[in-house]
Image (cartoon, rainbow, N blue to C red; front, side, top):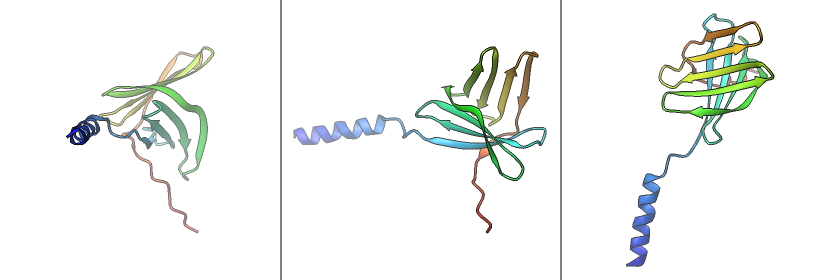
Length: 126
């Protein structure tokens, strides 16, 4: 009887446990059409990474690696700081649009992407 009770409690705990955390990668094309960003969100570590992808598919690793992120129902927000300079990335979880705000001493700039899509690594051609 105790074994059955234990199994029922174990099954109930497993059913209420959160889904396994995951890491996703998204391609966020600049609205201006000039390249794209590669956004990596690690839900378990609660981090966001932002790199750059050119039209040929080459990835440039940027300074924005594994930034602490606030994950809510509506958005994922991460901020990079270097002295007085900063960049804030806000990924809207409903529209898929990434907003980038920055201030490097000349005032706040803001940019938006087209809706982000899952990143697919290109297949080798040769």
